[in-house]
Image (cartoon, rainbow, N blue to C red; front, top):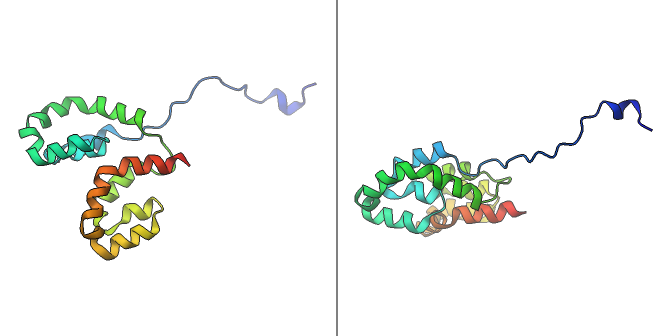
Length: 146
């Protein structure tokens, strides 16, 4: 027998709600402005080609221009590769970009000890900053597992 409140409850829906994006196309295009240094490729989880772009000036600007058209597909691939969660990729990358040497992105991710260590040592004299540049997406993905 149904009670009065049961009659007015919404039926459960079987429509799947899409996961929120982990990486934003607009932000990728903003990083593309610095693309000759590979910034957009690092943000989108492609550290090897990001490093190649860094050392070759975006493959002598040709790859940088081609990436203007490839960014939407690379963003979609990043959304599929990395899981969303409590830690926002875009916010972490923004903090890393502007305050990485001070470890603010690590404090945001809950890595208090290394965040303070970065603050006191200038990002472990830059070595830690390079490490985070190459692995930040994977670090966030691992933390978002829990």
